[in-house]
Image (cartoon, rainbow, N blue to C red; front, side, top):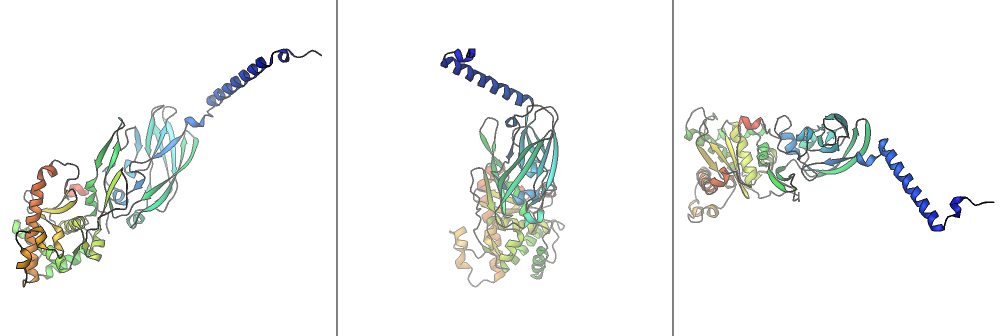
Length: 407
């Protein structure tokens, strides 16, 4: 029996021929899979966000019904609602690609389905799907909680699969100060979101009526009428009545301002809500400023939040045209050692034997003096909007962009 021609070849040549056949068959298989759409690696998606895996309820609630967008989208073409923060990156495989995103339910938002059209082929889009937030749950979240975000994506009818990423839902008391934004060059830049402190100014809190009634009972003023009288003296008198009633309630200075968030991507600071401060009678410089600004707004006096590195104080205009500005150091509302603020004047030794109203009036005037000096020392940097500095006037126009988070 004759051997086949193949078997007559030397062993090394037979091995070479077999190897060549295997390579050719494998290559043809890859080409066939690609042509038939079986190359799944080319169709994938990523879950993205701009805040290092954090969700800030205070930021979500405060801009939910406004057109403000404090979180700047990444530098790729994008579609959807940027304010929601959660995003998916998908590359369109043909013009006008259809994308369907299904977001599974969590304790913080309901299940939702979003569809989008991606106009250009071979372009990577960042897509911000609809998120049906449970606002009351966000508002009541008083400590950081992990949540698994599950997304299923379809591209032109083809299911790309489901992916899950764990986010940290921050406390309602954490105010987003800023974050690092990635640029096309590969570098990063700091984006300030300090204006969101205005979300903690709550001029509509029902507890304010109680404080105003207590202030009227002091007889310092007969009524709160804002700028109607038209004099700086009448405005100052109304502001002092608020100062006096807070001192009478024994509000104490508490320096708690930390956040449990540790990150080189995003920065935040803890702020007590109006209810928190009212119930505990504790404030730090930020708490006292937003609390006092809430009271000022409630009596139609325009407040200002002023921040310098490591400190915040409040200001207010004494005229309806917003030309004349006065400042208050709210940390002096508490039982403070005035000698720490004015060491050269030895004020504490002169306060013995004075009545509560006399002491309160003195601290009020000294608070204005101290805050004015602080502002003057930092005025150029505040007006220059340098990093770490802030000047935010709480007006109706600002309220159209940042609403109160309540509580």
